[in-house]
Image 1 (cartoon, protein in one colour):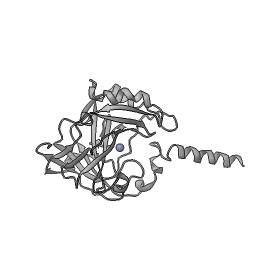
Image 2 (tube, rainbow, N blue to C red):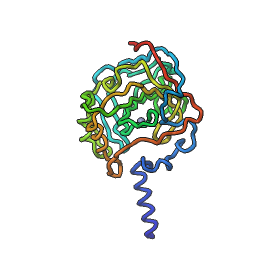
Image 3 (cartoon, rainbow, N blue to C red):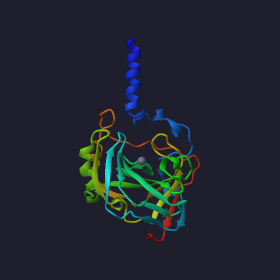
Image 4 (cartoon, rainbow, N blue to C red):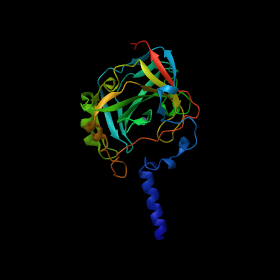
Length: 266
Ligand SMILES: [Zn+2]
């Protein structure tokens, strides 16, 4: 076997171990990432949004402390609740009822506000319950709804983040997993009555453009030290994952709505 062939084989094996994509080479991302039109994240600018009223968002089984697993998947920190009944969200103009599958974090927010990147962003990934699974829902426009929260750096630490931040040290290496107890509503803002809405995509490969986005406009505080704990996570190659946000994508004529609701229901 020639030296060049061995080097190529090692490169191929290495790429497959790291799932073939990373945040440093976004121009090489596969799937819909390079050529689909309705991609995420985007910059959010209220001056160009259309303001509308909607019925309130309805959350079912969210305000409960769950046992959950938290995993370092090499790209993010992923939390999966161990729940017997669906944790669902509907209303607020969503085209159906959506079941929560997992939530995860991006350090360095993905969505920006008038060009400003915030410290952290969480994504609560849900799929329309008219489909059997997340995998099936990924094939249909509106199949997925992501609720996003932006966290802004503050001088005080956010104690509600402690169950997550304290456990980050246990999953520094890719594929490490730990168990936590978490009430998902603790990571949401106090107000659900104002949010941004647009049609976009997953922000990781394959970037399927099937996502109804809800980004709460209230920013939640988090301390610099708490955010720093996230960036000590290591990727599949063992390198520090210092940031994990996708670059801002063009709007391509899409409308972004600024939604007001009277109250939160149920
Ligand atoms: Zn995400």
